[in-house]
Image 1 (tube, rainbow, N blue to C red):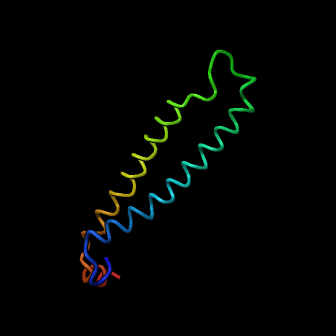
Image 2: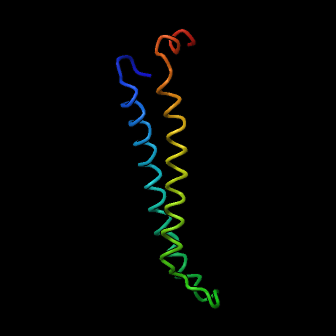
Image 3: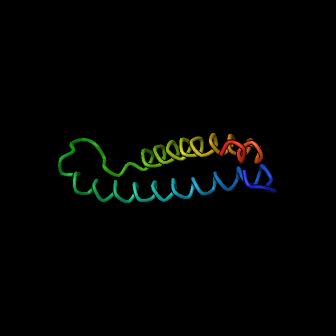
Length: 89
């Protein structure tokens, strides 16, 4: 943890930076899935390629997983005492 930083600021910094990357990845994935869906639509029978509920559900699931993946290490990092971390190195 940074010297003089509040725990909430360290937690927020780690989560925000991680979620920026996650949102970028989800956005790129959505665009790619729409583009690939158009290409593969001729191969699918009886299935809609552009089902908005699926896109929303998967995006929300991935966002929740990314938030947990960011929050757990951030919580651990915010609990570390700076003196103990410096002594360890």
